Image 1 (cartoon, one colour):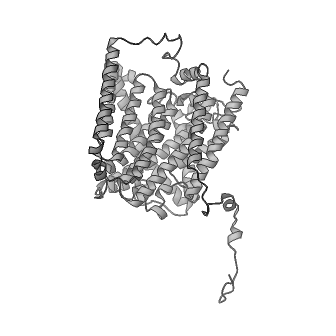
Image 2 (cartoon, rainbow over the protein chains, first blue to last red):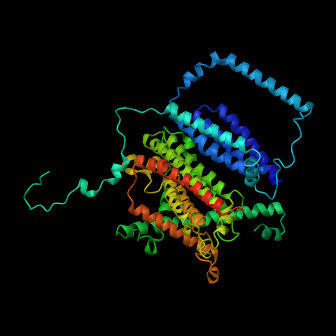
Image 3 (tube, rainbow over the protein chains, first blue to last red):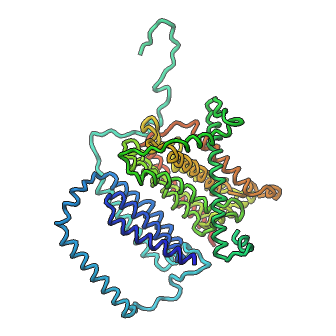
Length: 206
Length: 348
C-alpha cells in the first residue's frame, strides 16, 4: 500500500517536473525542475531496493552536476525576446526530430508487444538482488572481480577526459601577479612592524 | 516504536506510518529547542572569550534571549524585494531549513535509537548535505541583488570544494568500519584503541583525518573562519541581505541545525558516538544518549572557540586549503589506510 502510493507520488512528480523543465520560461527554473526530477528518480530507485544507486544519483547529479548547470545558467544574461525570435526558423528541424522520436517510440512499443528479444541467457549469480547482502557489497564484489578491467578502463577514460579538459582550458597568463602563499605564511610580525618608545613631542622617523 | 503502535491495535502499515511521524516530531521539536539554546550558549561563550557579559536581560542569566529574538522575528513584516523572483525567494530558506532537519533521520542517538537504520546512512548524509548548497544559491539568485549573488557564487564553490575531501575522509572511516551504516560505524569503535578506548580519533592513523574532518566541517557549514559567504565587511550579510522576518529566521535555524549535525557527525565518526569514552562497565550505566550529547556539546564548544578566536580566511586561501592541501592529503590517506588494512589482513 505505502509502496504503491509512494511509487505513484514519485513517478508522477518525475514526469511532471520533467515536463516543467521544458515548459519553464526561465532557464534557472528549468534547472531547478531538473533537480526535482533527479531527486524523485532517486526516490524510485530506493523503492526498487537500489539504495546505493539512489544515493549516487543524488550525490553526483543533484550535488555536483546540477550545481554546475545552475552556476552556468545563473551567469547567463538571457534575452527572452531573442530566444522566441528563432522559433519559426527552427520549427522544421524540431518537427523532424519529433517525428523521428515518435516513430522510434511506436517501433519500440510495437517490438516490445511482439515479445522480448532473447539476448542470451544471463549467467547465474550475476546482478541478483539479495535482501541480506547490502547493495554496495554486491556491486563491489561484481565490479572488482568480474568487471575489474572494464571498471579500470572507465576510470582511465575519465582521467584522460579530466586531463584533456585541463589542458584545453589552462592558459598561463603573463603579466598577472598571483599570491605567493609560502612567502605570506613565512612573514612574521617583526618583518612588517616595529615597536618604538618615542618621547612625547617628537615625530616618528619612517 | 512500530510495535508499540501495533499493540494499540493498528495494522502494520498504519503503525509504521504513525511511528515514523512520531519519530520525526520527537527529533525535530527537541532539535529546534536545542538550536535556540545553543545560540544562547554560543553568544555567552563568545562574550566570555571577548571579556563581555553576553545576553543577560531576558530571563534568568538571559536564557530566554533566543526565544525573545524568535518572537521578535516572528512579528516582523516579511519584505519581498519587488525585483526578486518571488517564488524562489521564499522557497530558498525553506530548502535550507528542511535539508538541515532531514539529515538527522539517520543519526543514532543511542544503541538502536535511530529513526531510519539504513545501510547507506553515511551516503545519505553526504547526499543531503550536498543539497544544502541549493538554499544558499537560490537565495542569492532570487534576491536579484549584487551582494547576495556574489555570496551564492562563493557558497557554491566553497561547499563543492570541501565536499570532495570530506568524501575521501569518510571513505577512510568506512574502510576501517567496513560498513556505511552509521550504527555499524559507532559499534566498530567499541574498544578500538589499545582494546579499551572507544574512539577512532585515538587511532594514530585516523587522528590526522579527524582533525581534517573537523576543519572541513567548519568550511562545509560556512562557519568562521570560513564564513566567506556572509563576510559582513565585503558582502553586507551575504545571501541573507534581502531577507527579513521568518524567512531570515529559517536561514538562521537551518544554519545552526547544520552546525549541530556536523558536531554530531564528528562525534559519531571519530569520537565514538553514543559509546562512553573508554570500554569500562560502570560507564555504561550512563545512558548512551547522554554520552552522545556530551560529545556534541564538546564539539560545539570547539566550533564556538574557533569562531571567537580565529580570523577569517581570505577567499583564495580557502580554495587553496580545500584543493591543494586537504584533497591531496585525504586522497593519500585513503591509499594509506586501505594499504594498512590490506597489509594487516583486516578484511580477511
